[in-house]
Image (cartoon, rainbow, N blue to C red; front, side, top):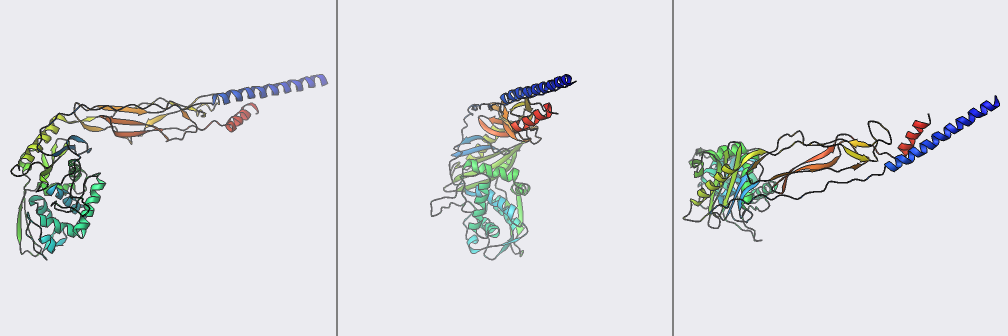
Length: 426
């Protein structure tokens, strides 16, 4: 009996010793396997678009822009800073519409009444409905009306110019500086002049006709062919005719504003709509007397160039990703220390399944998918690990993050020890 009991104790000891040895071997193997590295995908280079056709334009600076994206489709000296004359008034109008009371009354100051031609002919002390003055501003381009509007909405011409410059900055117009609400040539003591670029001016027009909360009212005013109104007391009446001749030159014409000063020359900013496409065009220094019609020639040339060459194309492509291995990660399916952990990832595009862009045949689209070959634990669910990038002619136009849709905890020594004890020491 004692011999049998001793044999059983010895057998139990050897079994326990074998289990400890097995656990030690497994622990060493798991710790060895836990070693990992993270390898990231390498980036690529951009692709340049084919050179655009050279157009014969009179303007010193010109831009054709896709109003939806703000992309310059054709440019000539588009970043050259130049005076812009009464094209200024599109900003005056949109600021008044967004911040002013259209039914409120604006009183005429002596300064406003003293503006040079072209003017409505208001007198100091007279009052006008602000909404009526916007027709005087945009149809006839009256300089005195612009100042009455500025003083009513901004408190002063200087205060209103500050509002104009802040709006320009919000729109990304870094090379635009407003001093007056009417566009008359002006300069400050520091040397800065009332000025913009063709690219900035086209961007401001794009905002007015597509993005501004007051866009419908802006279009209604600038497309009105004639308008009649009186002062607040009914003592004087006025008639305004729209001087934007381009509205009758192309059926696609949507809106626009002319301008002229001695320094600026003839200028124009306009918008055309063709199907689902809206283009804006800005022309600066487009001739001096007697070349008033040059701007219409350039406007037609650029508008037709855009309509003939550009169409919307959906550049979105759904992406499928392989599962990414996670070094030092706990496999969520097996919970075994020797199993390789993986996580699934997807592009977080916010549910977007379409990415339309206005393109021509020469435009080159490239999609770059940047995801790592491996990750290191711990990995959280929803963690960004890469990106899907859309490039147009080498320039990044859209990007979506690639995120994990599940996590992976870290396979620590503590976790492995708990596993071994749980598995081999019941």
